[in-house]
Image 1 (cartoon, one colour):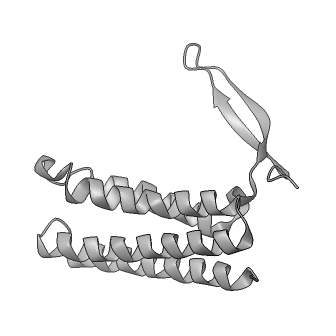
Image 2 (tube, one colour):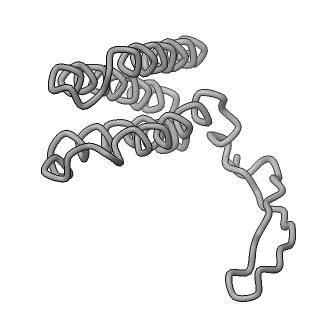
Amino acid sequence: MTNLSLRRKILVVDSRTGSWFIVERNMFSFEKLNVYQASLDLVNDIYILTQDWPKSEIFGLTGQIRRAAVSISLNIAEGSGRTKKDFRHFLDMARSSCQECVALLEIVRRRSFIKTDEFNKFYARFTSQAMQISALKRSIQP
């Protein structure tokens, strides 16, 4: 059994000429998961959120929340290529990374890096992400 089961069309742009063309490539099974796609959106939005945080935090809170958000996607991807038991374990780690992000958001809110409305928006998104991960885990029979 292979993870490469679907094909995806991708727009490729030649950086030298600016010309573009469409290619098809195989997709890994995890790329089809809505929970994985949502995690990529969260990573992007966390990078946007943190870009204006104090430079003194680049190796502290900024780096930590970025790594935790990226970890969600990576654990979903890595776990999908393993046994069902291992995949469930990787999903637990992905869910734990959601919880880590929530804790970090609370810290940065208290440090006044983000406003309460931003905190609430991201809190809801990480909660939703954790619930989606839990639902996926429940759907995988041991």
